Amino acid sequence: MTCHSRRDLGLLALRIGTGAVLASHGSQKLFGWFGGDGIDATAQAFEAMGFRPGRPSAIASGLAEAGGGVLLALGLAVPAAGAAAAGGMAGAMSVHVPNGFFAQSGGFEYPALLGWTAASIGLMGAGRYSLDQATRHRLDQPWMIPVAFAVSAAAAIAIIEKRARALAADQRGDAEG
Image (spheres, rainbow, N blue to C red):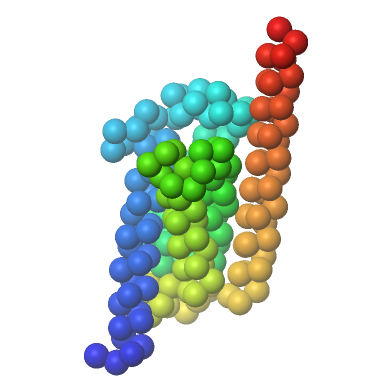
């Protein structure tokens, strides 16, 4: 087996594994699949976590995970898929940062790893065994990488800052009440 074949098989395995995990988490949020609570309960949870309004935030998060995960697994539009999933995981990390790094204490380790892996795949490309390759990279052009990551980063920053303002307003209201 050549070095290139090994790399492409490794990328396929990494894409499928990461994509499946992301897609299943997004499906929990959107549809209640795999033991998830579905969009209504997820929207309430997002509202309580400071993502307001809760329903659009929950839908966006679910789509970033489910959509980004499916596209990563298929190897289609990989720069956009990796950027979307990484942006979604940045939002998840913002919830877990106060608990430190490690997952066993509720920290941000797990969403950080998923986001980092999705971003890395988005930067590397899908490899030979992918729909991007089969479509002659129509949805995987070099210019798409900086655009997708810039848009995703800007959206994640805006959402995280909006959440921080909502939580600060909640704290001020608690202090006054």
